[in-house]
Amino acid sequence: MPAITADTLTLPRLPDLPESATTWRGVRRIVRAEKFLEGEGFQVRRPFPGADLALADPFLLLDHMGAVEYGPGEAKGAPWHPHRGFETVTYMIDGAMQHTDSIGGGGLITDGSTQWMTAGSGILHNEVPPQELVAKGGLFHGVQLWVNLPRSLKMAQPRYQDIAAGDAMLLASDDGGALVRVIAGDLAGHRGPGSTYTPITYLHATVSAGARLVLPWPAEFNVLVYVLSGRGTVGAEGRPLEEGQLAVFGPGDALTARAAETQPGNSPSWEVLVLGGLPINEPVARYGPFVMNTRQEIIQAFEDYQAGRLGQIPAAHRTAADIRLEES
Ligand code: MN
Image 1 (cartoon, rainbow, N blue to C red):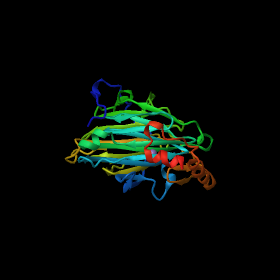
Image 2: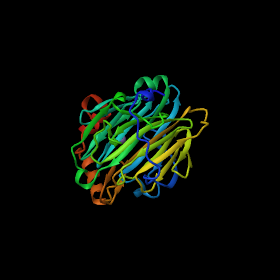
Image 3: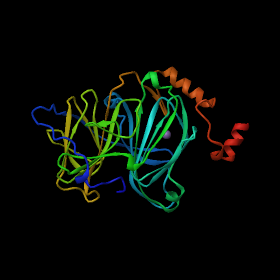
Image 4: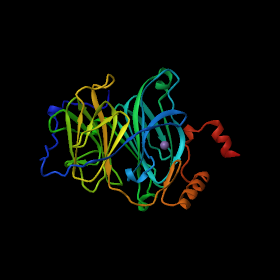
């Protein structure tokens, strides 16, 4: 897959943690992602939110798009829609997504690059596969993560960050058998490129068959492991974890995972996302594209959207129908 790769022998290594002096995090729960249709009707696997939203705090949602091989005309996206009160982080592994927003941000997210959009007080954006992918079809694989904002930052100025694949901080596991791409936050003193309002660490690891991944993790952060493809085990107790499953860890200062010796045919290695952050511990009121603290703030968000206060579709992207609507 075209997510950034490197020879792990040449990369900085993660520390080999002493077994006895480490408090290993236990696996608290394993959740299977449910399937939903998003946007114009593309399928996502969504490990959270589930019944217990607090489980993932400060994260609100994870959508795993694909991997899917689209035929000509099949690729779909999420046309112009608003957001307020959180951040969306889109990481594309295969294929591409074209992004445009109402604050002038935009670009092609492709082959291991990440786009970080802080909706804050309000933004409109358009997330669609590029014309060429729609016309010809092709492989499409990516994830979108929603990161909550605390009450004090919900109305922050909207912001857009483009993170090129080559900007990710690349590390190797202590045994050299895993490649770790730090997209945001800090891992063992190595800093990823994403600039986050809410303290988090977000990484994508490719773990070779049989290799072990040992990660020091801040004790005050929660941690989740989601499997993009392949299979392995998590925790010192070796709980099996396969494609489309999420492991929620308990407290401690490090975690361990291992790729199975034999991997399914579609995946030569075990591909996992590891994400964690400082829980915000505030009430969450959410409805569709808005995530606030109270129901009143959600009603306000709808009113502000209808009044055009979350932004406008840039003139170059407005269709004749949009303009007729505005003039009426
Ligand atoms: Mn969106």
